[in-house]
Length: 558
Image (cartoon, rainbow, N blue to C red; front, top):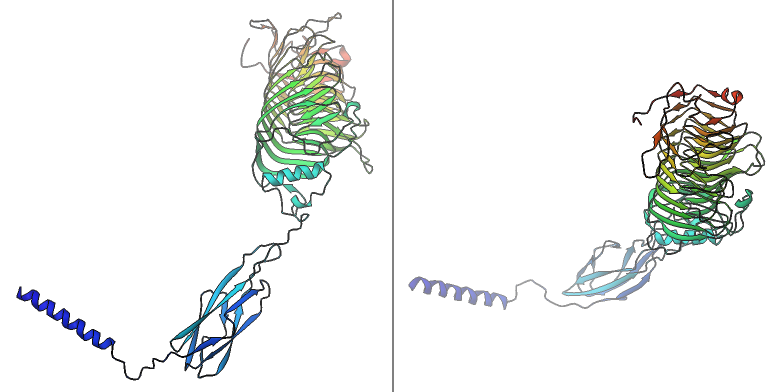
């Protein structure tokens, strides 16, 4: 108890002494509150660009004063000064709030505090921001999002300029992945009113795409549509491309149903490609096709529907004007001809890469399909169906392509279908070089021709050089009245051609048996040419143009 008393008494004594000190003035200390004023307590609307300096007049009777600021973009020309009843001009240097014409900056505010003689005053400074002036035609360097993609489509189809999305390289570049799942009714980029494709003239009316579209190796997913094709229309992600390029693009989750009402062409990437290029594009998904009831061409491709080249004014030698290069397709395809029994130019066509290719005037302007790969499978009753291009009508070169698509075809009626793995028909000035087929064909009807590479060689100038066939031919074909058997591991019908040489032939030939195992024929290195298992050739003159073929027995025996 004594100890506690001592502590309590000491604390009380300390409190008493401290109270006495607080109430006592310290000798020599000036505690006068001096008047302090400024001529402006608010500085408004300082310019964002080239703001210049602002001045404040300070007046005080205090012996001295000091300046502090709340932000680093206001710099006073002095941080302290002398009062004594005199006025002083304080200059405030305001930093720029401007970052260029195309950049938006926000308004800002800060405070300057002047203190002295137990008094202070605050000056508030507000500076304007800058609202960027956007030129609608000025480039933004590409397509950065879905809204800009939609605006780009509308600009093409309204015939407006595309500068806004064009980068310094002169390309319209996609800068992001896009998901098209929310598009209910797809309108192609370059939605030409009519095409002229039905007569192979291919002169479009309405809008088309020209220029370079660079997908930047980005992915467009969920490209889905159910579309009825009107007469002389073309349809795809891009409709009609003329003097243009589409490249470096991936299309995934494709789910498209196309119905033809009359002559029409469609491709998943481009409907019609004229004097233009598609390069390094991949496509995967499924495709359902239904032809029209009339005998009019319906040509569809996994990449492009209709490929056409036309000589340019200054051309004097053979030149590739239309090119599809380095494209890969993986598709599940179903096709119904819907009453169209044509197997020629007026039939239904499907090709894993392209539907139909030709030259406008049968001259030196060429179409080329190069280093493309088709995979998946085709189940249809189309009159022409193939892994690479359904019909290489004229001036078409197919080089270094690979087909991995298997086919089941049930075409019947008419003069018979033509089914193949590289192309169904190879026409004038056409050629196949160093292509490989790994897909097998099964045809279930007795008048459907089928070939490992080609169904019909149809021009004295066309050729096949190099490459290999590794797929089987299973056919219900019955020889015609002249005893001709139009099925073969290479060409169903060697009708007219310049040369077939240097091809490695493999695979099996079998007769289709409904619901059962095919009846495999005995094909070997000794009989594959003489037995016409490579296809039908009519005489010694034709045989003489078939050179340097090599047979390799398939690893899977019948």
